[in-house]
Length: 266
Ligand SMILES: [Zn+2]
Image (cartoon, rainbow, N blue to C red; front, side, top):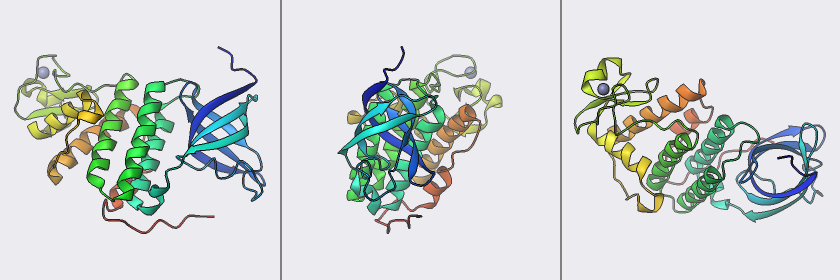
């Protein structure tokens, strides 16, 4: 389908780069158009009517004109600002991380409306978490997002059947291999990158197969959390074939309590 010359869409800014004297190049995530690259002209001038509506994570209603390389933002009106994210370093970093995942995994103009809804809901959850602050729900929301992003893109890791021989997994310690696509039974465990405890397997299954509203408030040990993170990170890295820039910052930022907002660069 050819995009009309001028079109309206909702969008969230994933990434922005200063360009020229006063412009910005934006990477947008839209519900129907997927990832779109656009230019906002003059947006860095204090008099710009667009400024303030094109902040990262703001859900905004846009009017765009299709361009040859980049679409041009002609109107912007913020619909939902997530102001609490500024108050807590870990939650803000988590929001950057989620945006980076979408940016890295999606090709331009490849629509994923379900992922868009999951993305905006995850940002909202992180904003709520920053307001409290309570990172335990935020941690689960990130793992939920990662697993359902993989699912949406056709990279769903196997946590019920062995990824090697397809036999149902039994409730014991199993193995895991991102290359082979999931958990491995003891017979196939020689191909595993790492061991996978029963507790971690249960958490991964629960997050993969449960609607978010039904995910309970899990209290997990540091060891199980680390294992779940390692399994998912190995899978993301395998499919991306590169590291995520925001991941080390997320690991370094203390989850709670509220930290002073990071200094923003000019
Ligand atoms: Zn097997």
